[in-house]
Length: 469
Figure 1 (cartoon, rainbow, N blue to C red):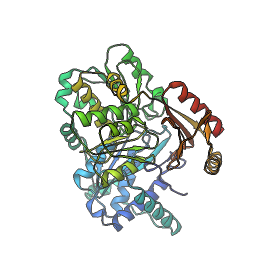
Figure 2 (figure 1 turned 180 degrees about the vertical axis):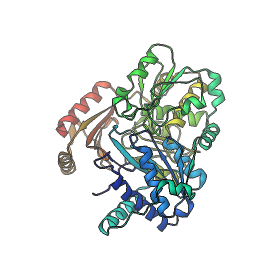
Figure 3 (figure 1 turned 60 degrees about the vertical axis):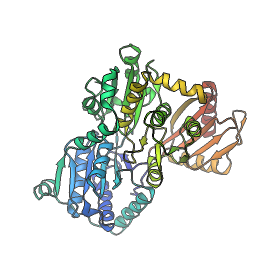
Figure 4 (figure 1 turned 90 degrees about the vertical axis):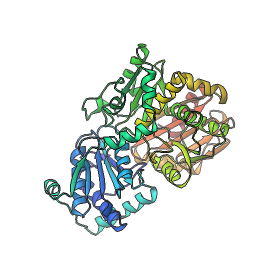
């Protein structure tokens, strides 16, 4: 089969695409790459989430690393992706591999590569890996592995706990004592994922729900979006808590529920934390956002005189800029956010704690903080629709939009377009609509932001009609 890396790694349906045989092909190609680049001698960090067979898949990758002469430090139990990424950077390893499908549905698993700087593999790296996989398949390259127990006995595979180093870094970045003293009544939903237990270990007063082992993730994708957080919302509406935090399946994404029990999207989170970093932490630097991220970030960057960059969707593009330039904060609509002074990586746990720190410093709730900013820069509404779409229909739609993009949508003239990733239509007052096929699933994503809820809904209805879904 052809192995393709999406927005962050290679993912597939377990037992159909994501099999031990296909995983072995990808792992062997990765070891070939690491050894060719002189990175194998620095060792490899491997972690895994709580999905079905993740531990076994991780052990298989470790066996192949050992077979190729690369020493491995394997997480002794499930761990969040940001903790593994931090371990890569802190230990000076040549790379890291995380077995996870992140926010994808339970039937998926995946293979994320972290480069030596602790962030997602850059597009240039994943292109090379795809080429090596294809070359190895064509030339019947043998997968070389050492059985797990033998490799452990020889010291080629050692297990470790990534928590200690990661927690130390978090304690340096966030004022945990200040948060604890503020006495904020908080509840966190790790969605049965790899972030279970991490925030409560740092802040024992925080309550946690959905923390048992459940590879089906309660029957839904572990993605911290509105429709998946109804129980968390109900807890906030009860009046017992002031904030709810949610993590995705590998805890590199963040979602939240505000003091009113309403969903607090990644756009809102980005806006509140960016202002907190500027005004309270006194940090400076550029700001990076993906093509589907709120215009509030643009306006805040302009207000504080910060350089703004826009990239295609996928944190690897943000990571690239964070490595090249002085970037204060970067983020995407899906809840992946990264900040200066940490690794160039999404970190749902750190960003959740930064929300609590912003509340502790100000004595205000999340919605109050956001509304104060909106009163200055304007009020915005946002929504997204996901529709399943077959690959042949998806390709036909892409061809149609490329060759004959609409010049008017919902009776409004399109002022400009951005087709760097999907098809973004921008209107004169800054409202926008994005039609974008997913890079990892047979899904079409439709996004819109506008000044009123009604206009957002009208744009999305128009997008459904345009796409024929």
